[in-house]
Amino acid sequence: MQAEEILTLGIETSCDETAASVIKGGREILSNIISTQIPLHQKFGGVVPEIASRKHILNIMPVIDEAVRSADMELKDINQIAVTYGPGLVGALLVGVSAAKTLSFALDVPLIAVNHLEGHIFANFLTHTELEPPFLALIVSGGHTALIKMNNYNNFEMLGQTRDDAAGEAFDKIARVMGLPYPGGPEIDKLAKIGNAEAVDFPIAKVDDYDFSFSGLKSAVLNYLNSAKMKGEDINNADVAASFQKAVIDALVEKTIHAAGEFNFNKIVLAGGVAANSALESTLRSKCEQKGFNFYYPSKILCTDNAAMIACRGYYQSLKKDFADDRLNAVPGLGLLA
Ligand code: KG4
Ligand code: ZN
Image: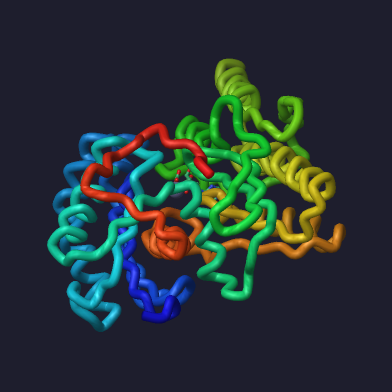
């Protein structure tokens, strides 16, 4: 069979989205089904792992069925199955891994174990079908913030990562304290549009090399909010959101542009849920234009968790026969491997 004809079923259940997708070859999305649990977790202000696992169990087979049906085919047409096995919530991951192992056995097709973080980078190949490595990737999600040298499809090098909180985690925590609904990132993004980013000068930690740190910034924003409340001062939430967001973006953009110069990359790729942030996207885009770098980021629906990116990553692993077997287990603390 020609590689461009291979049909890959992707399965993703690492956090609060149950997702399945069928792609053809490496880059053509035939279906991309995402059943989000966000409304379910909203009343708790964040993801409740036990509830997430139970909901995945209820959703997984209907979501897979719908992905296959919307791709205009039947399960028996699928050639291989790619599943996220980490990082993520262990109970949530296990639902996807068990479903993938069962289907791989029943359909007698290869199983591919995909690292969720690598999947986020690969979302870019689905949006930009002409994109090829090498490039520099900035992953910013709810659980991770990292700068990665992607040398080829199967070789990644971590240049730096957060030493404490991920950028998305800081967005979610600050939004929560401001009384905004979960997930906080999109809410801060919206609010910041009507705020003044110069209103409050929040400090951003100076860390060596290409590592990041957001816990000091998070504490500074929380202290600012608490002390204003104690003094009975009015808080302009939009100004706080815009000033906080600018501090995060400045740190991310400065290190990314510096790394691209130092390591001679002319392509910069943004990935992960926080890549959906409009100010991050526009700031990094304009910095890239100034420096003559090409800038890529995924379409909005492929920024946050989805299974098309997992199928895409899996497809490129299958080209080098990187298959898993029925001993595959969830690895909640999985880092970047290659
Ligand atoms: O990649 P993702 O869907 O899940 C993980 O793998 O962690 O990222 C979710 C994170 C959440 O923290 C959410 O608040 C953040 O991405 N996020 C945003 C935006 N949309 C989602 N953060 C800032 N601005 C946004 N527009
Ligand atoms: Zn993710």
